[in-house]
Image 1 (spheres, rainbow, N blue to C red):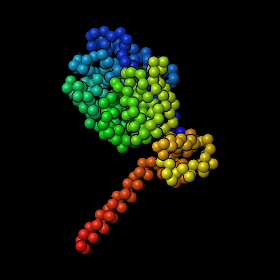
Image 2: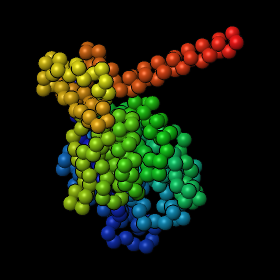
Image 3: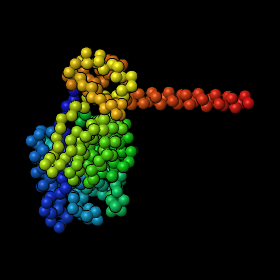
Image 4: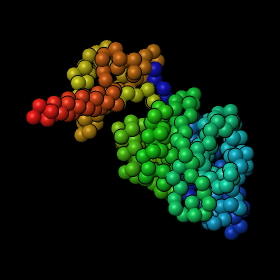
Length: 319
């Protein structure tokens, strides 16, 4: 069945006028970020993501220890209250004091509860030299609208992060970052058939669909990007499936959408029905999802190679 979700990401590079005291910097940034968040609420999103360590922007790495907060510190507490007030999910990055320093992101649900914490798995060398401890596990949370995960900045360069989330069935990856990621975010979306929503400290944060196409980009005139996404999607290869599209439309008409990206030979089957899901429709018509198709091709390849090796072994024995 159709699963619509309104997703907002906020571009935020810190308060315009920051004091010099590290703790005052955090207070100033937090106040400015809350103002942007309140603006985002006009779109009534289901989930909002903020950039990497947004409230700590301007605090030098070597001073992070002075401002790091526990999970129940002021930054996360503030957004727990806002999440409850507006009944929306929040991805809230922060500098965490937890057995040392962590570059973290809190998953806050509609009731204002922290339901999970993601620790940046791949801090930069500079961060680790400053005492930031790397995380060791990708995190995926089951929300009321779908499975969500988070990657932070430098994580984007390492496949273990996205592969860990993909194994847990992630549907939207929130990329909270100091840098934009650009092509890399589109590659993750395309290669792992997920939506990517990036919240960055500079303009150019994106919403990307599971075919790797940019849906929206933040800009000076639109620091808050909000779009309605439908998570009831099955990504397919055109091979063996395209011949069934006419029958699909005849059966379901406007209740489904077949969104084709022909250069890549892929498409998305999207259900707008309130009675049947895209997965159920695919099963009904014997349509094979992309990942299953690739796995089937690789299984066949391995069988052929094993058979060839067996024949070569027998030939060598006979000679």
